[in-house]
Figure 1 (cartoon, helix red, strand yellow):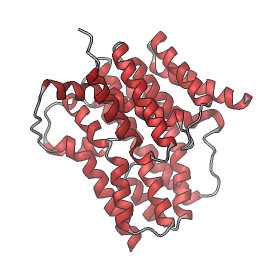
Figure 2 (figure 1 turned 135 degrees about the horizontal axis):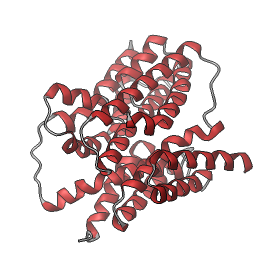
Figure 3 (figure 1 turned 30 degrees about the vertical axis):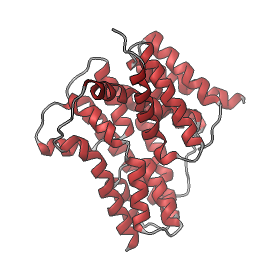
Figure 4 (figure 1 turned 180 degrees about the horizontal axis):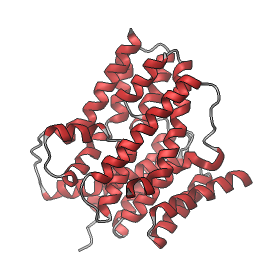
Length: 101
Length: 219
């Protein structure tokens, strides 16, 4: 019973974090500074998601193959402007480094 | 179907993570229905792994729910960032779009809009495919159990981080964006390394964007 309570409770709370910004009518203060903050937020969050996985893949800070892989991904993405190519190149580099190291 | 063409490495990787989730949930004492219900109701990988760890240790439902809240606070700024791109829509549609909000769908969606895309088709197609992939993999893991494919072989576990990195590299408009991204990545890595994984992403994103306010934007 308590397992079901945990699942339903955590599920409802998780859905709430998703719906609050999308389904509720907000009246943003709308100061220029705050709007600039919101503009910078998406790239900062995606970079944070990447950084967490790249710099601490096993929950510990480590400069491993993932760091080199991420550098390769960024370089290929900037150079070829191709999302899929950058991802696949990075995966190949990390697979190869793990094999060698 | 650009979303599937660009997103398949992430979809595959999520499936490969979903199977061990199903297996671990069964080992933590959940039955098949509970395991699948968790993937349908939470649909949030990090929070689900944390939840089964807590349940295995006998934590009460309030602790599980509060932990899920902390881990998923990052959805708030994500939803706020996506909303203007979705445009005005009826409440029911917005409730549906909200259900599909994950790290991956957020990043893929923002990446699409930053490259000049519009509409919700890209986000919805990717989000729905991700949902199918995660839930199918959960069920396979819960039913079959045992034989866990190791995502580290072929570096499939890196596919998601690689995708986030590529989206930042493609979406960053100039040095200022790149600097904000680098600061966010380092803070998030340090926080996660320091055992603060539940809040690492939301805190790093908030702080880096705040630091960005100190830097004058390019005119």
